[in-house]
Image 1 (cartoon, helix red, strand yellow):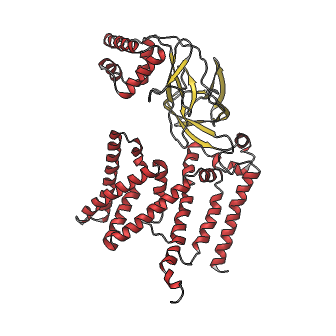
Image 2: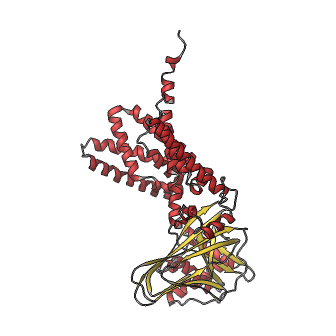
Image 3: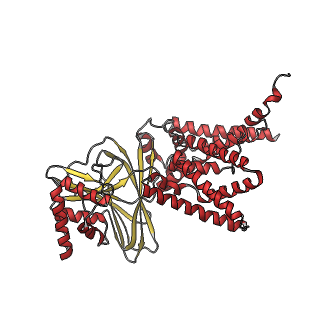
Amino acid sequence: MSSKLQISLVAGILILIGLGLTLYKKIELGFPLLPGQRQAVWTLESKVSFKPVGGPVEISLALPDSQAGWVVLDDHFASSGFGFTVMESNGNRYAQWTRQSLERPTTLYYKLQIYRADNVGLGGSPVPEIVPPELTADRLAAMERVVESLHELSSGPASFTALLLKQLVQGQMDQDATFLFGSREESKLAVVMDILAFSGIPSQRVRGVFLEDGRRRQQISSLVEVFDGEHWHIFNPKTGQPGLPENFFVWRRGGASILDVMGGSSSQLEFAIVKNTLPIKTVLFMEQQAGEQPLLDFSIYSLPVEQQGVFKGLLLIPVGALVVVLLRVLVGIRTSGTFMPILIALAFIQTTLLTGLAIFLTVVGAGLLIRYYLSALNLLLVARITAVVIVVIFIMAALSIVSYKLGFAQVLTVTFLPTIILAWTIERMSILWEEEGIHEVLIQGGGSLLAAILAYLLMSTALIEHLTFNFPELMISLLGVVLLIGKYTGYRLTELYRFRDLGGPDK
């Protein structure tokens, strides 16, 4: 059997397997082929990690309730080797893990799935008792002057809080406010709560998680909630903006603790977040039938949410690789490095296209000038590459600092560009410049950017993101397609254009 026939047979089998598994998930399990057909469902996985200190261990984690229009579909606990119970106290639910002794650092998991049913507020809440802060004489005097100044400029609790946060965010504080916020090791939010309590305004924290797809190791965030006698008003202390953010999932209102650890130290609560577009019934089916469906039990959905977020990005790489294969094998476009455009495309996804292009051209252009100077010093290859890496990092840091001072926050995403790849790109282009000239540098550099842009446009589409994450079996079919392309030995499009005169009619 010839190699061409073998490749065709293997590629055909791979394509059929990938399409067959995809159809099975579509028909039998109800997975949607198109994004947006169903309700967007968020999966949150909380990770409690701690170190034992000897003796009995008791971990208590506050569980969220359905608030602000969010509906909790289902939740699951990982409690291997621990006694586990779900308790209720004063209308609040708590998960409790217990164990008589523990010898090594441990991580416990709690996963829940939620979706937004409607966009409503938090509603009413018991008004907490105001406890004035205990202050030293100098802090008391400063606090009185700050509260008096804010009262003169405000018309009520809501405007008082808005003015306080505005001064804090914009750095417009007077000497007294600067003394209160700057002479304390605790968070600035604690000082805000003390000022509100001292002024007699009922207030409490609203703690929760900002839902951002693919986020890992996210911490609990806090909002400020004040009561004006009739209604509750919410503010974001980091931005000063009023109102409950649409992507904020409320975990707990009030001052009760979220995590209590007895018999342990260095405890930490982190969250991993993933968004998908599966129907609600399908999500419930997956969670309830995972043990009965081998395909689901060995799917990406069986992984921890943190790893799911990683694979959501990794599964886009084969799509970018297909673009590079098509351009190099069928079109004939030359690039600087085989798969460097894929990494640049991944960076563009984080930075946006125009910003990423500007950063890439700036860093590579400056790096080429530095590399031209280093080549005159006749350094060894390893030392030269190391010097270029250091220079690239310095340029990226300088871009971030300057852009931040000028107010261009988007340029701060320069850190998403792969530093080592940029350094190697600069080195390869420098060598190419010396050996082939500037013309070849422009051709390969332009080809790399073209491939990266096309890969970015394809990888960033909602349909591709949906299919690669929910139907990773399609990667098997994609492998078959790449194998077929790998046996192509005909003319490339650029070659057909180059030799177009040879195929013309005789003159």
